[in-house]
Length: 300
Ligand code: FE2
Image (cartoon, rainbow, N blue to C red; front, side, top):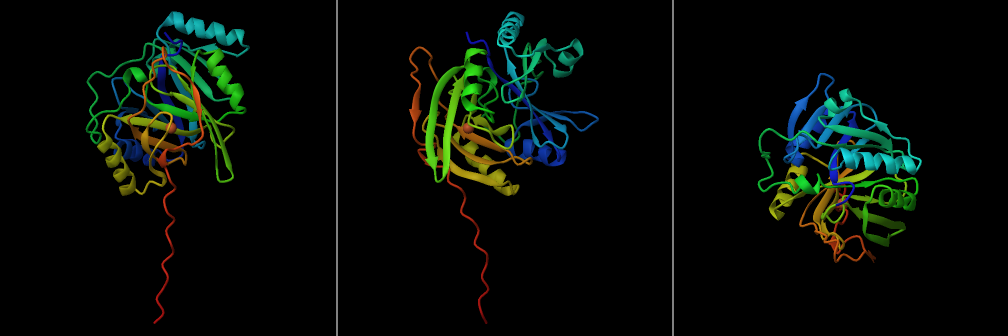
């Protein structure tokens, strides 16, 4: 069993709470379950009580990554491994655990200085989740909420940290050039989902994108339509990745970071999996949308 079970939750600090509420509910199809007096919101998408926390603030970026472990013993093992690696770790207080709705937690910063919370015993939803917009369902629960591509100070340093200290396994790499831009991304898994975490080099924000997966191809098309209907900026049109085989599109969150919305992601069997290196980020598609041409006036 992996040390880390799954990507448990993501917390974003955002400057426009109203835009995020519309984005999370009407575009992505998650469900608002809690709104605090400071405007913080929680959103649900599967059996867990919540998967996203959105808090007010100027950062417009990822605030915290939450990774779930099985139990108190696994949390202790993580704390021991982090401490042995020279990472400063603090245990979450009873008050902090109650606030997160977990049985136990530990906090540290990863090599790229991203705040991380490890936890066990999350509160589950009282009733089965039902999306107003996603007719099939989000592919989440024991596979975690989806995946995340993070910024690093040094790609190899962060990849090796997550593998050697926290037990993530290498899925593969993608190395290629897109125009003048050199792509070199490491993909890691911690359960059968092809990757729960991926990383390239330094980026302006802590996260490039998070990915949510749905169980039907039509729910990807419907999400694309909703994104267009809400004037969400499409970053990459529909396409398919060669490594995780995800059929997906990319667009902007209200904070300028991106999300990927996809279907058909590959499941890994560690008994037979052989990491490899791909030389393309997409098999087809994932093109930038065509730029709108300014209207030229017809001379009279
Ligand atoms: Fe992705």
